[in-house]
Image 1 (cartoon, helix red, strand yellow):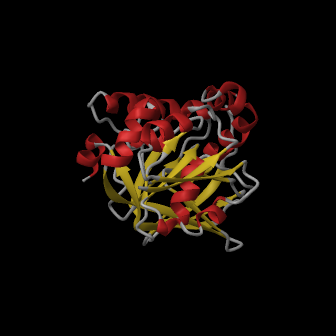
Image 2 (cartoon, rainbow, N blue to C red):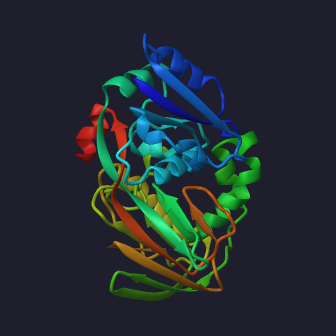
Length: 302
């Protein structure tokens, strides 16, 4: 096999796991190419000949994996995410193993399916891709505040950030989902492709990253404690009781979403924050990327 590995040297959990994967995977005649970045070299510049490889393996956090997937939209290149970040939500949603030998076996024997991606177009025309969850408002504030502590505290950095954002900014929201207009006040808006978060909790009931639509969750709460009933509902949903998400969360579904906020809200896309703010337009890109899956995930998503 001819394999291209994109290695993010600055990922939150950059240990020896990638090299263990290579040792477990490689066989006689294989061609393994490793290209590395510490976030200085743009990831897309490392993928100029990706279509010439049998498999692309991005190694890093969710931001790294999404950057590779977004760059490969529409190419049909098979991708096996190698989770090496802080939260690794894409791997969680895909039910990926973390052990090197299991990932190596998956690289050779795994089936694949195409998945949707989301794309945000900012007011200045810049485009941002996301594979899991993007949003504006409260979640972006948490991502930004967690960034300095991620290296030291790992996933716990997000909980520290949430604990310091008890009274985040409330904005007047105007959200247009296809032909439906929703006007309200709240903490922000989430655009969901894959729905599962840490501890296998789901923001919404469904996890449908192949349906050609985004789920749109509008956070109508006025402060962080008002979101607690929705969190408790997610816990009950995990137990199969499938409760409503409370009045703090309204969920819609659509292919195109426009988000306006007064005052403007910061944007995050798969945990990345780059200073972009509302307004923006988001759309789903159907069947955008081809991902290698475990048998369990293939059965679940097919």
